[in-house]
Length: 63
Image (cartoon, rainbow, N blue to C red; front, top):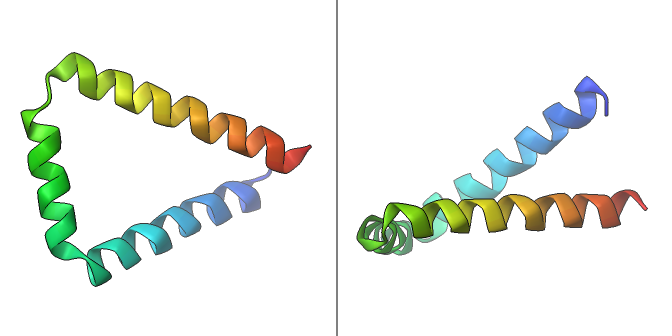
């Protein structure tokens, strides 16, 4: 993986997150409230599941 690919990945994350904040700010607030209500362990598991899903999608994209 080159530095250019990493920079592209970061840029795409920022574009998608920026769209979410620009188009649905109230949805972001509700999501944050729901996350705050979750136990820490459940948030950690959700983060790990998201990480694994992203790695699998990246692996399929590269294949």
